Image 1: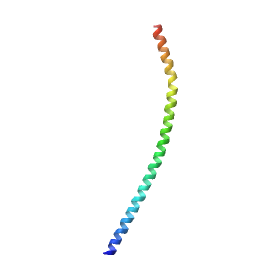
Image 2: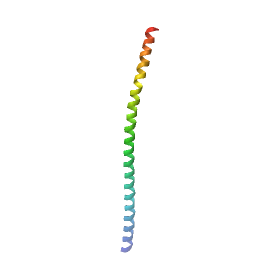
Image 3: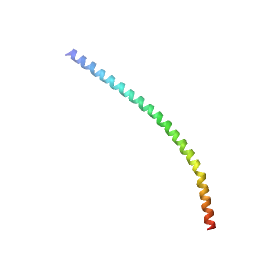
Image 4: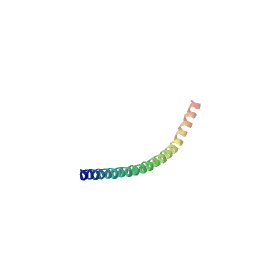
Length: 73
């Protein structure tokens, strides 16, 4: 009986150690994904800032031309 309990404890310990290993692997993968996502978000914010800045001038020109047309029309 004692031997059987020891065997069950050893098996359960092995199962738990395997589960812990898998969880650690998953945590590491998620941390790497988080770093990648943060880098991607930073690049996207930079792109949006540049695109917004680049589009403002043509919109100003269109607005100015529209005002001139409104005054002349």
